[in-house]
Length: 219
Image 1 (cartoon, rainbow, N blue to C red):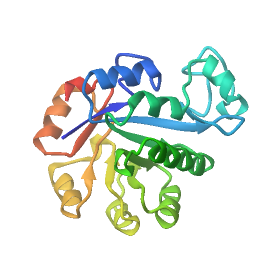
Image 2: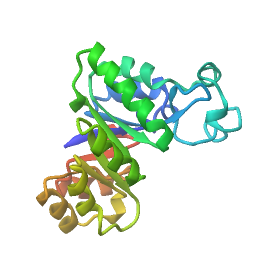
Image 3: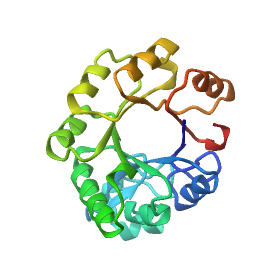
Image 4: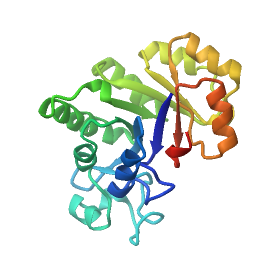
């Protein structure tokens, strides 16, 4: 079962920071999950929200600031995170916007080529299924993960349509039967975001394929 650090190991360090990803590596994760947005100068930046207000001392939209300005606020580039991780674990990149999709994929392709890394070390996920559909048609070499937070009877059918690698449901949606049904169709089950030890114990007993957690050492 994969131990997946949510936004690095954000129970221990600021989310989506280089410190957080290093902590996740130190804790022996199998994968890290992160989020990307574009800067004003179209650099792929690692931050969850479209705005700066919650996680930085600044305010305003991420896409109104340049790469340099965002770095000054402690927001890393995706390139910097990939360089830090150096293929030591899988990187699950959540695409927050359609505009960020192609720049992200281009960056990852360059990284994999220059480092002789495998596309198997990258997992692209999104709540926006249209983004995933488009990637599956145009760049099928990427492993895709389908995110959802409410009951979604179409998730398995959609996963089949795009040849997805994994389904990423809100963990509260799962039952033992649902886990087994998803796995019977050949998809991995990576629930999020699971911090409660009793919930982790339950999901582990159901043999999910991985757990996304702010505290990956609890898995």
